[in-house]
Image 1 (spheres, rainbow, N blue to C red):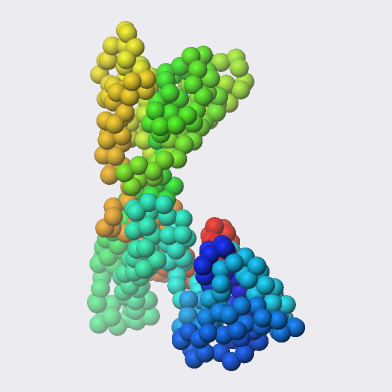
Image 2: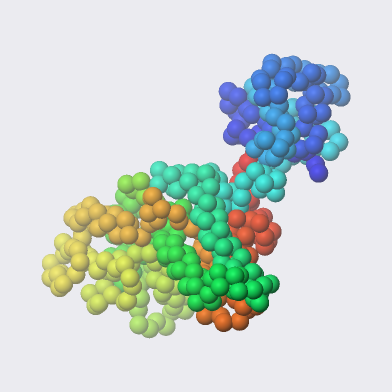
Length: 427
């Protein structure tokens, strides 16, 4: 396996640049630059020289960490360089000229940690979320994932599953022995599988992590010229959407991310929902508006007619400052022109967010984890109805495979590239 290297402390220039080496030649390569290496896990000041011509590259702190008790599970070296771009480039060039060394790819240090058993897939996903966290809520949820909260939940489920499977296997192997056959009846096995399935469903039913990471999707929708774009601009306090008195100005969806009150939001302006149009471009916009409605976490409806069905809707009495705009049973009156009702609208959205975001003190799963946990729950539900012990055992094995895929023990190679592509090079 190649030895990899990369700056892991952020892009230069900086006061200090921490350059990591990880792999079987990490110590030998560092020795070629620094001469004698300091005692493991102790910093030592060393002059770094180019192995080719002996030129002084930098004077740096050097730390060595023998594997497998390292971040990557391999021998690891840190070079604490002066953080100028030229210094970093010179040291990287010297390392790149050594046979068997190469620059790391995005997320490769963490990928090796996963492959070497230093963390599981759910912890790696949490680390990815932590690197991208912009709000305190995102940070807290990501830290809990990196600390193994999801893994511990899945392991608890797996232990209960193994207890059921052990009884099934015992009855299959020794069904002619009264003491084994009577240890747990088929009815009790069914009951245990059913209870475990329901416990899993109670967790998968919670709001997904993506709402914290990507922001709650708030879609502004209604007929043409209802004031959607004007309201969007007023809510985010900048001109993100073109505003015009001409109906049909907005042809495409406009997305505006905003962080407010520690919560990430994605506000989406949409084309007016006309019943019919001869304009093919407007028709495309209407189609995209309807697709946005299907994806919305919260719908802000600006039409005078009743809103379409949606589990989280606020029916707004928009343009409330205009004469002749009598309110008729709507949730909230707002005026983008005067600012009336905007703060109250945000307050109502924040109350909805409390129900739509993952609870801060409970395990929350991402989309991939929820799908696999749902597969496990479905297999357990089928097992709870299965009277053939062989088929019951097979359903339990299917549930176990889903658990293993959540933590990365099986069946995840196809998604690793996508996960680590969003990591920085030095992670």
